[in-house]
Amino acid sequence: MPRKEKEKILVLCVDRDNDVGVKSKIEAPLIGRKKNIEVASKLALEDPEEADANAIFGAVKTLDTLVKESKDEEYEIATITGSELGGIKADRNLSSQLEVVLNGFPAKSIVLVTDGFADEEVIPIIQSHAPIMSVRRVVVRHSESIEESYALFTRYLRRLVEDPHYSRIALGIPGILLISLTFLWMFNCLLYAGYVFLLIVGSVLLIKGFGIDRKITSISVPKPPGLIKLFTQVAALVIAGVDVYNTYSAVVSQIQNRPIMGILGLIVENATDLAVISAGTFLIGGGIFYFFMRDTRIWRNVVGAVVCVWIREVAFRASQILLSPTPPTSVADSLVLDLLFATGLGIAGTVIAILATMSLSRRYRGFFRGSRAEKSRKS
Image 1 (cartoon, rainbow, N blue to C red):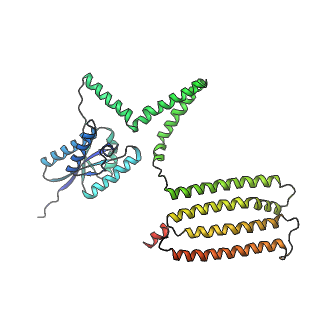
Image 2: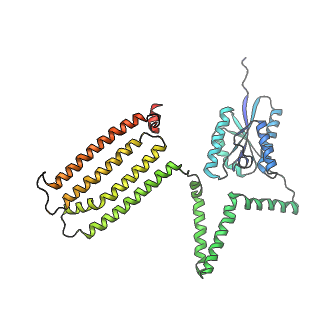
Image 3: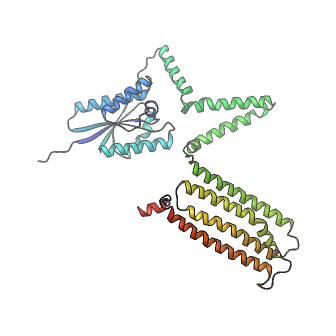
């Protein structure tokens, strides 16, 4: 008769606000009895009043009790942590760490150990991976005497002041209100204190309610090449906006008694220079970014910069034809010849730029390794 496989049960300790990671500097998940005792001891030495250390020790004791009482199951212990920011980020961390634990120890059920009621918010997350057999809360016993109550109150008051997660609300908001009231008092505007109070409190509630603070802190700052690209893109956008405004102002002031072709010529004449500068700024910034990223798309930007130069000349020659009081009647007209000459030079310059970049791309093939899309297609 084949031997029946033992049922696997996981004793899981949950620290949703990541006090374990912040204070012990050890990354979760913590798997195994030895590892959990080691981290809990370090956490207790770092902060003897930390409840999560007691929870881990409680989980170890639960494991030992289960191992002694039953011989038909196989047990393992693990501790997973969330994030000090709380919210969705904490839940994601817990879910991903639990997946890692269950990949190594595919438990059929879980015994959940927490340090209080707050961590039980994660029960739905845990149940989405494996059923929970039992929940055990490890709560530190307190004496009901006045002295110990005072010590407990002092402990949490200190945490309210020193812990950044709580002090931002408990101290930051009153501080902003007091500073605002001080300025209103200095300028004899205390009449508006109620409006300022409601505005500040409403802003805080809005930011916390929609998680705007967490979204801002989760935004990653780009590296220097990315900053250069971002700066040039913003600069190009600003120049384009100024170009539209200048062109509109110039055309409106000179639009009287002009035919439609003359108005079009005014637009082209006034818009061309800043439009070319805007496009050139965008392409040069992208080229610098691609150079530092060793991306072959730098050659595309080089050709684009050359095209911008001759497009400016062609647009300028075309605007002169549109603004001419006597439109040219033949190809031999000087204005038409100038336009054709600028177009021919532009095409020739573009062809030369393409050939030069092709030669350079072959020569520096070892330095420029292609874009991410090209690398993914090759792999």
